[in-house]
Image (cartoon, rainbow, N blue to C red; front, top):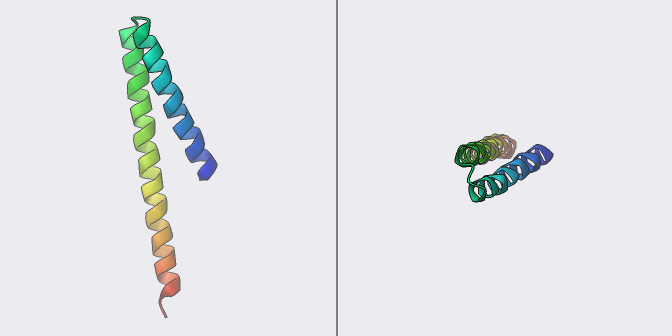
Length: 66
């Protein structure tokens, strides 16, 4: 999961950088597309971490009960 999350966050950062570059070059539609894609990558990364944390907490909770 860690490597997949790192790739996803790297893609989000690259997309944000490309959105800024496209905005500077007056390509508004392309900048919007990159910004939306980056935002979606960030949301997916957040959901992945939340799901992983909840699953891990459940596993640790079961192991600690007698």
